[in-house]
Length: 106
Image 1 (cartoon, rainbow, N blue to C red):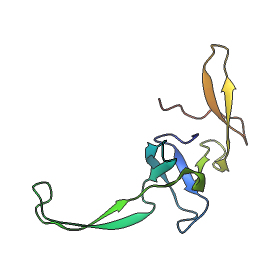
Image 2: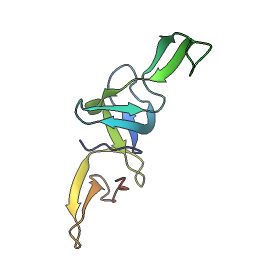
Image 3: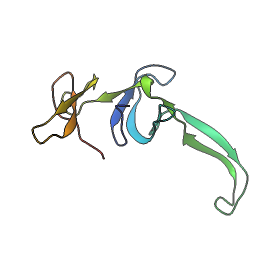
Image 4: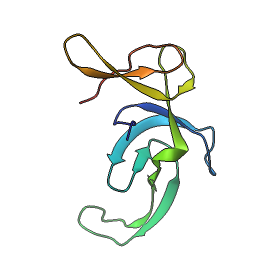
């Protein structure tokens, strides 16, 4: 999976097409990602010690990773990712449009 936590992505298909946001969490086994402000669902909760009022809570739900593309910081467009090996044997992610190295979030 090329998308990592804290990447800026745009949704390219589905109901939320065109929305942009930051990746909050990645679920690699399910191939899904959680994007800030995208795919908001309403969850009805009972009162508990954590939430004594209870009621309806709005939160993000994960979407499939294939429905999102990374936004390059330099060329500010959606892009595919290439991997490049540097001289010190590190592998970095590179924008396919402009060749700029993407921030590594390990």
